Image (cartoon, rainbow, N blue to C red; front, side, top):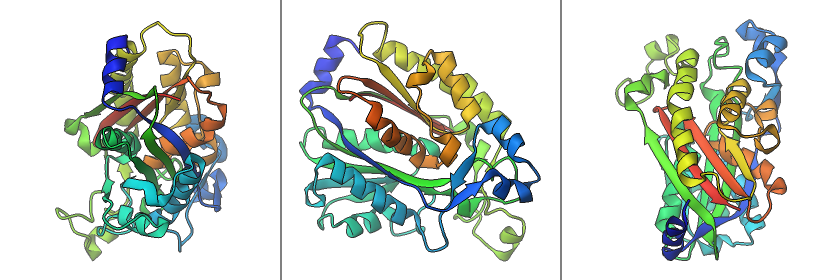
Length: 335
């Protein structure tokens, strides 16, 4: 980002990440656990995805439960009280229920004051970066604090016999507190959707077009479905070039501060190839997919929380989400 662009951001009131938090269920699910019914082995899963295990929610755990824990941890690390939050935004495609929004349950549990806006945003696995971008714009001139959470429980939507999906996904939540900073902060963002490819990732039934019925349940239309090969092509042909343009525009070749890469944990092999193509070294490419799998909208936020201990003031961090819609979302943040 050139000096004029930085000045423009700061003139509007710089917003940065003040604290991070995350939560994954305690229930560890191994490759042997998921592979048995899907007809694949631990070795088969590791070779194709780099995933060793994932966490799945217990029957009494909902998306909001994970989101509350992650949000509370982010507030504590930021040193911000729930009473000082002016916005709660939850990115999820697996809400507690169709309505009310999961965000209002999170706000109530955390003790956010009445009257503060709380709402959900659904951009599937790009959702956290979409939400961070939205919140940053909304609070830029308020000097307030926003709680942004990505949370999903995908284990409830998976066909246990579908090896294309059941081996990939875990459950979790990740959160950040956004607020005023003296410099740096969120420097640039880019959001994009590709609706002509919207059917690559889908849950066919359960909405207004195809309501849930005994027939749709019998056909398995309430399960998450994905065309894995087409999604890989989407990442290679759409996400990669778009992210390259974003990096060239906002990073260029200047500046000595380290650049860290926090990508969506879609598949360990896929993200490693993307990082290598873009020139991010392994030591600054952050991954949690081996332990947690693909946690949907929580993925980038959970990984950022795990990376936070290694980040130093002035480091630059590239957040990259991509997924259903199809969609892609990037943010450049100065730590």
